[in-house]
Amino acid sequence: MNIKEAKTEIINTIRAYNKKDGQGCYTFPLVRQRPILLMGPPGIGKTAIMEQAARECGVGLVAYTITHHTRQSAIGLPHIETKVYQGKEVSVTEYTLSEIIASVYQCMEETGKKEGILFIDEINCVSETLAPTMLQF
Image: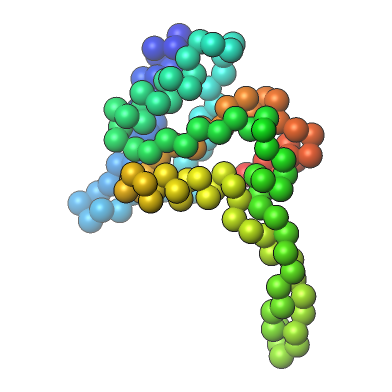
């Protein structure tokens, strides 16, 4: 597949995932949606294609180079909260909002677009501490 064909496939996928019925409900169930893996050598325009696809589909785009992230910045920082379960107070670990997810919300606030692309660049170079966490999704 060449880069032009890849762009067409990405656009078709975005449109399929965002298609709505007459009542405004998505026709493609969220649980059936899958990430797209766009592979190619450095400098062939993967990021540019994602920018073009987002623009053509009218959706937001958040692009992140994952090599700059640690487990903490990707999933959030831990903090201890007190919860009550069956009448007993217990300490539980919760996490702050991920820097990546926070940037998605920021994009939504700035653009007003509620649909978009989270483009994670250089995923093949993710750190050893972050890879197991990312594979859970």
